[in-house]
Length: 415
Image (cartoon, rainbow, N blue to C red; front, side, top):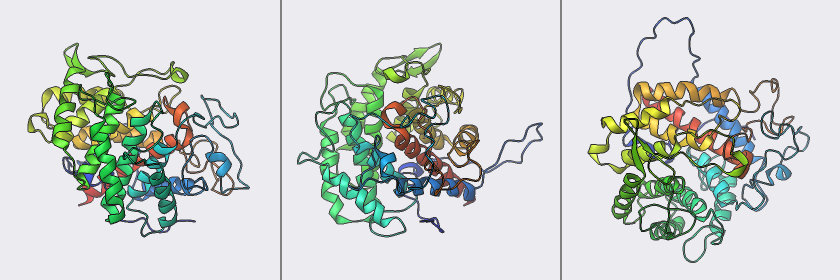
């Protein structure tokens, strides 16, 4: 299926969730430089997004989910060549782009659904109605009586549940389907009740310890739910999260730094990507939370917060061995979008080449390929710091969501 028209409606993922505080600066005349930066049009970006959606369509499991491990075996491109990762991580190795076998696919399915809502598609109408409907049905089948999505014994339970909450509430906000209201309310209630006493979240509900990876995803889930008009005591949750972020943020060489679970610390790494350098993902999550909080003292003009945000501008996206970190890029993309202007331009000008020039079908060696002859066409290789867990589905979903943020910003600039 080839999409001929990209819906103009902005979904909550890159619309309502982000528009409240985004600052748009009018383009300034370009200065003469020896090296002109590469420009991308909204039409070009949308073309890449559509290619990613087509990859998801062709790799959906029969039960409606998207599997981080088995997506390749569910391919609807029977004659296409499979090349797996091109470089760095298990290059050319069969299934070297798959995620962990023990991973629950709730988060993966939810992330993929967010890529469809990010272009204004849902389960009730549009070119991708069938695929969204199947994916949403599977996701809802994974919700228990408590409102929790996924296996309650899984180590990454709160990560799974937070992203699933985000997807269901955004599907509800976009479609207005009343059948989703009760599941969304139960999901939000579970996420709120699962908050730890210290104000953060971690693997499981009500733990003695928290970290800023799980907390960051939980905040995104709650923010999406709030913007979708799902009832919940968000003020109390954000106030508690404020205390947690304050506790894990400390002075490092005159600039505040948020750690993974303690002041000034670095981001965490799984054993399989221990050689990847740390990036300031906790800083991005902290700044994003402050901007989402609505507290005027933490707005884009706060000097301390700006210095912390600038740490990300000093660590721009690079498509290089061991430098790719889709989770960091995603949180920093959402955060820099809020600042807008020159900050956003600097981040965007690094992000777009990294993503657009390395998406399969456009990467070096993929010239003159298309869906029928290259199974990976439209996706991104699983070469990031967290890809051992989420594989190609994770890398493609997060990359697509980031491109949708860039496309939304371009629409704002045009207004």
